[in-house]
Image (cartoon, rainbow over all chains, first blue to last red; front, side, top):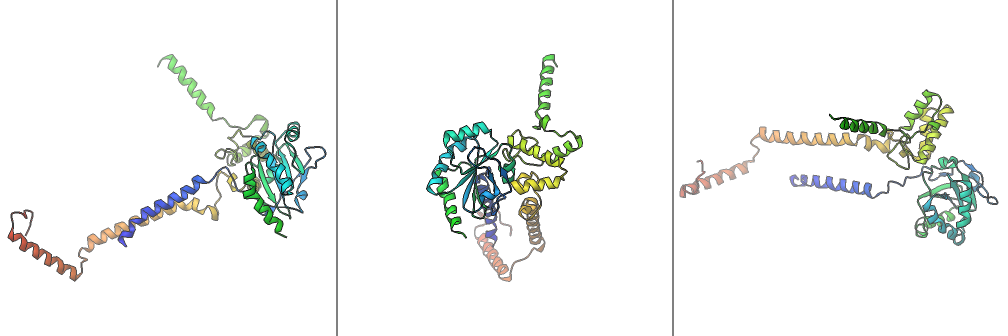
Length: 178
Length: 172
């Protein structure tokens, strides 16, 4: 019994080390979304492009989809962009764009240059919808279920590996839900 | 003090004084000084989510600018500070508040240090009490142990008589 007391500092140290280890390895720049499992927020954005519709809450109902926050000034958005062209075709997954804090001309030119994978693109130059979604940077990607509820948020660029590892399994699961 | 040192000091002090400038821009400010003061006070407790350890009042980030304008817009609409805080928490999460609210998930944060202090105090109390007991209580040996000590002392006494020269520190 007396001898066990000497173990207490060791145990305290191990506890602290594990606790701090978690704190240090966690990416502090990724914040949890308050929207998870809640209906997508109320928003209604005008279209960015002529011929491609704008984006509002009601557009997100009926099928599993992605909402992607992007901007032409955002370098990681450029990096993840090829992913969307691929998955919209291969997985038949509609992706809706929120063009965030951008200029119409540059955003239009950017989509012309790199291709437009978005079924709809809402134009949000002054962060109106961004605030409702709790956007704090670009890119951000949300997975929306059939009922228009937000089920997952990914902060940062989605490369193909990221998509296959984190988003695709969820999309398949959500498609199976009634 | 030479004039040169004096001049250098003056410049240093002037630079240091300027270092605590805020990010809020003149065109963001509200006309009513009382409302602007409220906006400033509230902005100081809202975290800039881009820089994370600055308030939106301190930060030059674009998102901080947006939130400063949003706070002022809502103040103009007549919303209370708490309504504005709730609005931001609903969208960005509690992390947006620089002062964590007291609730179940933050109990450890608020009372953790106190708990550590109490544990330490209890530990010390136990230690001192057990030490005091062992000093004051004195004889806590069992009859068996006492008999064994007596036997050992006897043996030592006998051995000591045999070669007293070597056993110098013996006190018989």
